[in-house]
Length: 241
Image 1: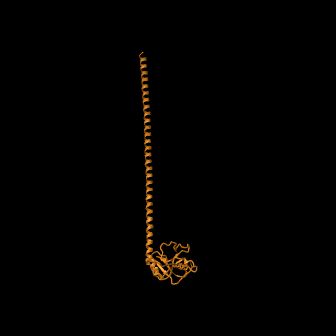
Image 2: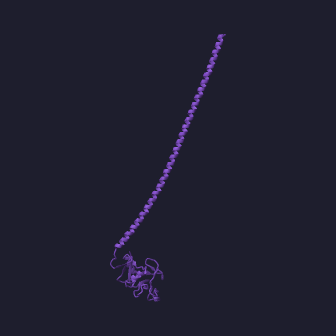
Image 3: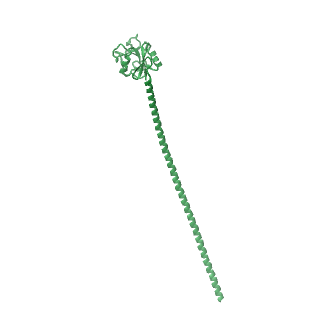
């Protein structure tokens, strides 16, 4: 009987021992699983942190790239503006230099033989007579043209040359519409009394479409006479210097 009881006690102890061992293994297993999940959570957190860091880095890089590109555009625009300004200033300086050189060259020049200077022009009075057309051709060959009268002082100067001479005024294109040889219209005139009369309706005089200085008058402001362009007269050339 004692042996039987002892045997039952021993078996009961084995059962209890097995139960304790099973519980211990279960706790260890659960602990191991918990540790694995924790490591996974930590790894996921680290990965998420790395991704966030990469995202921040990428955003900063992109912002810097756009900022630098914007600065480059602004700097490029400023450089282009400065270049354009310098180019304009250079062109202006070159123009001023050319103007000064031209004025200096004119100051150095003296009237050629046979020419007279008055204000800013040279004047040539011929020593022979020709038709109005031939007279103008001679002026053009000299690098000038028949004189254009622009003021009372110039009119007085021309009359002082004391020659009845052709000037650069004609109405050969349209009768009664007087124009200078540079095709500008007549705005100031010095016609002799009752002139222009286009020959006074006298067929012998023909068409009087050209203008000569009348030296018979003592009034410079009344010294123009229309005359047939085919008549021979002295002529006055003008070259603006």
